[in-house]
Image (cartoon, rainbow over all chains, first blue to last red; front, side, top):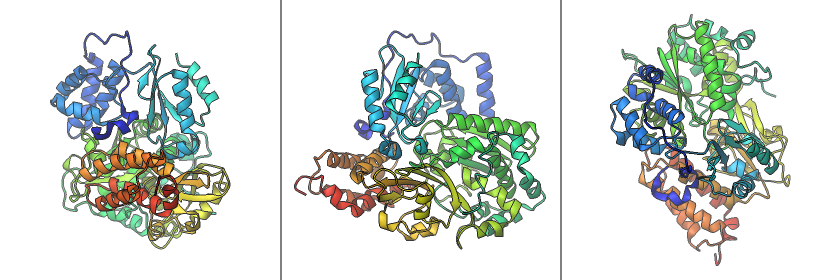
Length: 181
Length: 407
């Protein structure tokens, strides 16, 4: 997370911009979403507690958290855009550039490493033609390597969008990739 | 074989539902606890010798008793479901397979500390556990178990190991980056949003209903003199049956490896990490230790979150350290200089050793930097990184030296 040694942290690099996809014309929640923001803010003794949940909402709505989205979210919280930027850049799950339609995040920590994560990663590099942290040119897949996803009993494993895919083999990966459109 | 307490419902495919939980006697402990004085609940948990199962092993009842008695404002209960310690996956199972056990534990704990509002901080990557737990919370509201004295707010994290550290978690809950805070004040005095706060791990709270239902003496009797109960061990790496196993805290590491089917790969044990990535490593002849908090402390390591990673003789210890060093370099929150700088540099040094480009003095430099930085930072993250740095090198020095030209 600290950017002092960025070279060591390929997995924290934000994905490259997906070509040919236009951003939403305006960064605005609709009325129902604004009501949800107010509901979330009211759950916390200080409404700022809802910042992470609202950033999750923003990412689902806008696809990623642009600087413009940071400013918009800041305005909903009476926070400075700098505070929101600090938060967005601290966490790995907020994308600062548009990711691919699917995100494949391969765990490379100790148990997965012992179970063959390096082979899984090499296979994906070859299959997708990109490095970890990058998105395929057609915008289909963003490929990340990530730290322990806590499914070590089923190593090697990866998170594919919102699912944990366990006991990976190159063959299983190929089948998974075919299902990602 | 020890009694199964925490995983008692796991074999039922509907274990996550309220109906199944009730059918197995669920929420009976809450019915009992609501007739008890709050102080009596805390006393029972103290007598049970329950110790925190998230990593620090602090006595749970004692923690609860730190809430100031004369405090008139709100008190918060915050559940640490930000599981992230390498080698640990037990809370994922509890959230997915027995979410009502956690809710019941929260109801009882909240009564003990006079809390009416609680937060459950779930790791952002845990989508399925979050869905399961959210559905259970909805069921509990619909059944009138929640919303009549206790509210639960489910809060999803956003990807940061440091938020598993309790004060980092509170910073994150408050809408900030997850920087740990200097203690004291401890959260029980000044925690979430400046109010007295109890932060407990998922598994710890899941122990509370059985303690109330069956009594402190029974629970204490399952463990050792200084720690009661059973716990869930996440066993992975080179074992034949990697999985989560429940056993007494008095089981030995050797017995636990046997429970997991024994060593796989070459079949010959080389080393074991007994308590998650941050625990010092044990060699093959150091595994006759009991897995309670004090047993492993006396062995120079720690039980931590009970993530057991087994290495057979074919595993390269320098490579294992490189992988963990990368983890610490990536996850250091960057707040304290010794941690931010050392984790990055030590990763680079171990990496070059593994690549065959190590310098003659590298090992001594790593040991020196590790030892001098320990204890100088705001939270325990760096001390957790130092555990593996020092133990892997000191116990397997020859293996590192063999990779260094002219060593």
